[in-house]
Length: 237
Length: 237
View 1 (tube, rainbow over the protein chains, first blue to last red):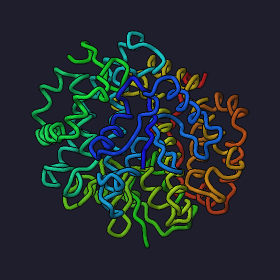
View 2 (cartoon, chains in turn orange, brown):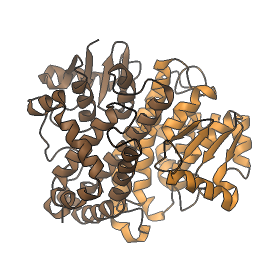
View 3 (cartoon, rainbow over the protein chains, first blue to last red):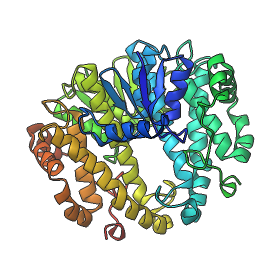
């Protein structure tokens, strides 16, 4: 099965959670929109929805045989057992999905620190709100959300978040830590002592042979000022 | 099977999407935290997570036999086929879930119109940002998101959003329209001509015998200034 991933070609964004899973599994996949103009045109045609039974609302989406599936967490739910990156039983599979949905909530919160008013305006046009939102994010949301994942990980023995082997949830938590280090280097440096389990999970994921090879390759798009995670010195007090 | 729903007892909030599904199906369920102090204590004990294999991050969550499941869209994914409110085949079930996840995204956007900076501050403390965010929401997000659902509904024949019978997605879209009418009565009055299919779906859902009985009962918590949807005259220009 060759999977077709559709996502914006110049950012990690939400697509990165899918890329990490496909890479760790050594799956046969093509990152369609990175294939130049023709790839982008193909993505936009599917988004537009004519001739697509189940038109996606937004990238990322995945084509897998007859399936066209959107929503990051749902794509991972679908791929999980197929890539051996999730439990197969209903209870475990739902638990992994539930954690992934909470990661999706966190991603929105991270993005909105720098764009609390509008994704259509520049950061500079919403600076005061961004500063206040970031303060709130670090005061309440980071401790609550990352604290939750730290406890879930510890409760499961500390090595993996779900079950007895690596899942897409572990890969996604790696990406969260990486992204937060990019966006908030000073704050994260101070905060990481409170989440030693997640930091150690991040290190183990980074060292997995396929992930390490991927991160060193050109397939890994660098962090930038256009994705979920953006660095603004004034938000990293 | 008696389902136990856990959600904040004084608001519709995200719990309402689950309540509507349970009510439409005539399911045997108890809204635990509405059972006074003891109910609230039971909810908080499960949230705290000691002795719970899969601790929920936040309400709503559902107890169904051995399962404790959180995240609104996941609860509906789980309940859907059990309550005959979703297709049973993988493709249809994933499609309904995908739409529900996009509804979840919309819910965050609706909430953040009045609280773009912090859920811990009053509206009055974030008024300028709320006005700008609401303007952006109505200019870009409402047409894009509700326009999408309008097209999806039309593509499926106009009667139901998914498949050939009522699903939880239809019930959730009813709740979106109701809530937006509460929060933005003037704006919605103008906008509804652009989404005749969704408005007609809303009317058909409201007239279903079990939903009509539920809406007229005390089990339906009224809209208020504490939920996802809140009315502020200045946001409803």
